[in-house]
Image 1 (tube, rainbow, N blue to C red):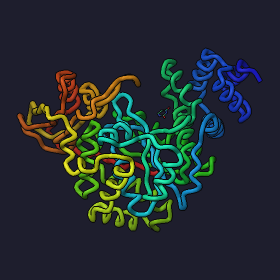
Image 2: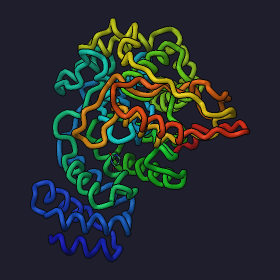
Image 3: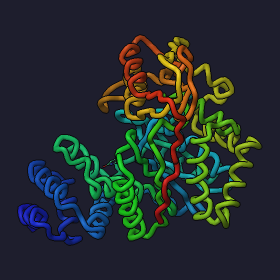
Image 4: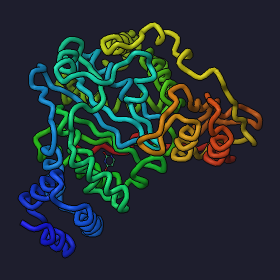
Length: 431
Ligand code: URA
């Protein structure tokens, strides 16, 4: 087989076979195909797209380029969720312990944040002592013992995707639905769960800016998952404003704790319950959506979800005492941002608010950047809220970095109008 023939076939709009995709991925991972040929292939794919079959072959070939976790020793149906990335998205921190408290098996590998979106692993690292690395053996044992483990990606998961992604990043080919779908699914399929719920974010703070694009991505990921023999569902949720009020690593742990104690913001609870009910039904723990929602509401109010979170943190070496006073995890230097006019909040550009948090040091612009875990933004107002001139719109938790820039970004990101507006959060389910 020759790479030039594969590029030509893709350039001319023909469908590649499993053998051709396997050859491409294996040879590229070994270093036998140069970046310039893969770059040409990526651009041809960008313009000509891929069929479901091709995207599935690509996802499976990338999954098989590295380690897959075998969770079969853990009894029961293992559940997992994945978010395509948002601002203030701390659903995993709430949903993982909530599902485990109800008897689901949550063996979760999460990522770090990049750009304006946060990552669960950075958030958990804001808890002193929390170890994000466990051996596969300890990871499995912890799920067997307490029903949940949340770690960073261990071993060499989908190395072909890492190489592909780095090249896509510099060849303007990140933004291509079959490449995104196969990239995400290669890692999800390698992490071994039986039932996966994908939270596909839509809106200006998300990868997918329109519902049409998000539906395409969701359908393709669901189809790849099913062709690979897994139960996969996608829920489209809005990213027209940040999720919840708090953005930044320790701040998001703080809000997750409030939610696990039954005092969470409505939007965060709504997304958590939507994904959770799907997974509880997939795991045969609930037989209907209503039953699942009732079980979850109970666990959020009787402290069983919160206690499971404490158990998780303790099992992974974290300081449980500090969680009783999560405000201790935040920078004690604060700046209040005041409204410049009266009215109703009609828009909150999540992308720019995520960037504002990044300028304060909560997120990374490049993979190598260091972040401050104790900084971020606490939004006092969300879309639909009334505000008066001089009232506090947000509190920044800061160090000596980026405050003016973040303030300008935040004020530009928030539109205050005359009429009250509401937005729809859960847009569609695809299964
Ligand atoms: N997230 C991924 O893991 N891969 C992509 O291609 C885009 C988002």
